[in-house]
Image: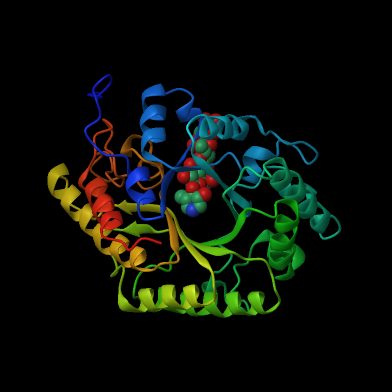
Length: 346
Ligand code: G3I
């Protein structure tokens, strides 16, 4: 691999460009990667003003057994962020995926409320004062499940009903009154009927919870964009951002990347196509003054989840992120830089 070890870095850190506009740029990373690849850890800290652990704060990683917690990898990441003057955000307290193997056989209607209460109090309490924000709930809407209210048919919904959402936010606020509490969702970024319908439902549920003074501080828009599919950054999506902003909520782009499986093989041409999606999307989201942060799901293509979960059929490495596998900036880096530079300061 042709890595730029030892060379002076030619590109300006995105964290500094974002900060000039009062915004935050950062990314997701795994502790197992940052602790082994010191060159990557150095570039990541130089570019990112905020880090989100990619897996270490999910139930499956944090809870080896019903009565124990494994904070070691996330604590390592917290020390790394502090040493590099970065912020950290938490992902995620309530999710239907990445639950521990023991979950199904152990959690039932009799103990679910207590389990969730203990988890949130312990985990949010552990990091209290150190978290910029928490994804309190993740991917809880799925109108396709045809449940009243648009809720996804998750284990938590089956065990506790939709009331667990309000409960989770209130418990998180008690455990850390300073962290921004976020509701994170996927599949709402384009102009299709499905995305627009989900945005409409989300807005309605946000309004209902805010009317009950549930301490939601912001929304997280995951933004796993699929190149060549759907129009991103369009007028209906921008109207949604305005509506969210009018509710007094902050907007965070929490997991941005561009899946390039539908794009050409040639890396140079592919980068143009990927960067075009970044360009259109980021210019739309950064137009809104409530958009405080943009995080990509990773920083270098080398470590993107897409290479494992949605590999290209031609076997080539995916190019979804601002830095390629050799840690060189891609056109997506320059598109991100331009979008921050042309954003209004907040
Ligand atoms: O840590 C084990 C390792 O010990 C083992 O050898 C290896 C074998 O497969 O698995 C490793 O764990 C994997 C972990 O990623 C770390 O690489 C899990 O199997 C795998 O399920 C896990 O996937 C993560 C996935 O969420 C599920 O939690 C991805 O890294 C992560 O990128 C992905 O992130 C999600 C967000 O949380 C929510 N939004 C969508 C996004 C992409 O799917």
